[in-house]
Length: 345
Image 1 (tube, one colour):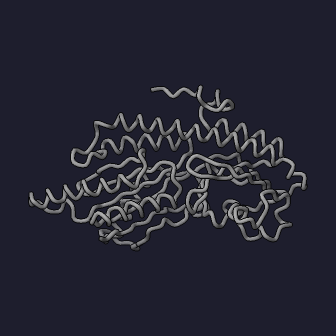
Image 2 (tube, helix red, strand yellow):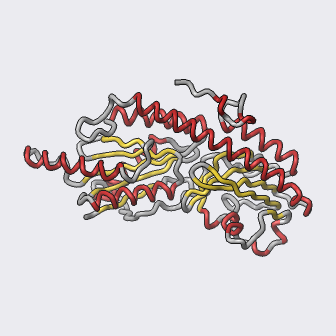
Image 3 (cartoon, one colour):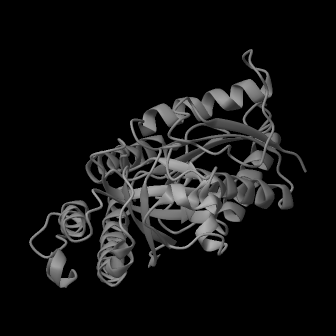
């Protein structure tokens, strides 16, 4: 099925997707306000994730994530600082707060907006302070924010429709016992999502989990009980994930989740929900998870999540990490971010 863009918001027609259209809006805003950097950021749990940006000054790119509570935006939400700050240095209340990656900024303007899968801000920045008349441009920025919100909503809906088609294409590649995708089907969807992440600069999470004790004995009676337990566990997991999250069985007791569009802390929350669902079903499991942001691949995330399980269970040496929350993934901290957890009933 082709996805005709005739239903897209008027401004978006003629563009090949959200990002090119957003760049045009950012350029118009720069000309109108004098602020050269524009960033569209979504709040996802404890993180902010850059959806799109035009940034000739600070080197920010789509797909970076930041700890929300450290951002200047969190102080705006709390009513501590105004949404328009022509001269950041003159406002003591803004001292010590980051915008993105501890960058030094002179002028700041932020407008809140509703987004598919949550809410966020359209932010304009400059290294130099501006005159107080910057506040007069807020109306134009609000109009741009409303346009971006509508465009992003269309982009998300279109992408979800494409994912549904991909799931249907992989329908014949399912595990006979549990009905989830088999290794071939899951990796087919993984490749499709990775290609999409590269093209649209989007983000995703990976969770790998091992149902403890399954597939270790050859006794037919035990095997039948294990199969019943696996089916029970999958039924529990389906109740706490989204329809287009890709759940696959990679081995006798090893399962995987592909979670498109989530921020790091949201991946951690899903992992906690899955762990709780399994525990309530009487199933113990080991988990590893990772997040794909800028300059990373889903293949790397899978390997990191698998390694996290091995470290957690002692199969390989390393520091054991037991947690139900993914550490904040900062642009300034671009090292591997992954966690292993244990769920014991």
